[in-house]
Length: 305
Image 1: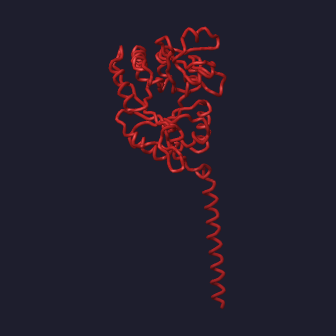
Image 2: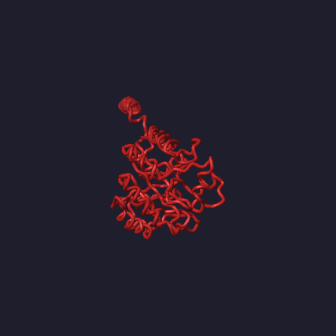
Image 3: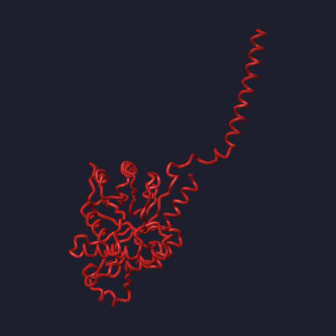
């Protein structure tokens, strides 16, 4: 009895010491700096490059692209741009801007490609930004630009091949081919681009081509949700991909990464799509709100990386 009682007292004493050591160890671990921060986020290694869609911030008052709007973004740390190129009815000049948006902004009766230049220049509310002015800006400040991706609109128009040749000749003359990429819809367009690059005055050029992946004509699952046609990523013409944010998922991001080609997603104007791009380690996002996107990514990285 006495031995059993002694053993019991010894066991209680020993268990108490063990509990005290365990509690002290737990307090020590919880006090360490590494316990105060969550494990680094999987996408923290490389935040996506932010591309300004249309060359101005939609959160500001600007509604058309100008040298001033682009320089304001450059000064804010936005170094990449995704811009459309168009022409008007009676003039070979090329301009920067999204034609349907400009038509609405200026309340035009006809499409820009069918509107005479003299009619536009007669209006005080119309401000046209020549492609030549953009290329001159890139030439003046090459270190400030990561890349400018351009899409020549109206590919079905009879004048499109001549305008494509003009575009590449302007790029070659400005000496900024290393800073430019062009968006193409398919391999047929890509072949036309390569031919125009090879014959550009001041060329030849080799400008990267980004294959466009749109949600409007994408395949859909049983629920009607669009998804990327991953077989398109095998295109030998594509140096990269520009995909609708509605198509972004892990298979698309992984397939582009496996092929060693960059994937840009557009248009990323909300937390959900920006977060998806960040989590899936997409190299670049195209947004109408570039300063917002930069701020949100900074907030997430500060909190989670």
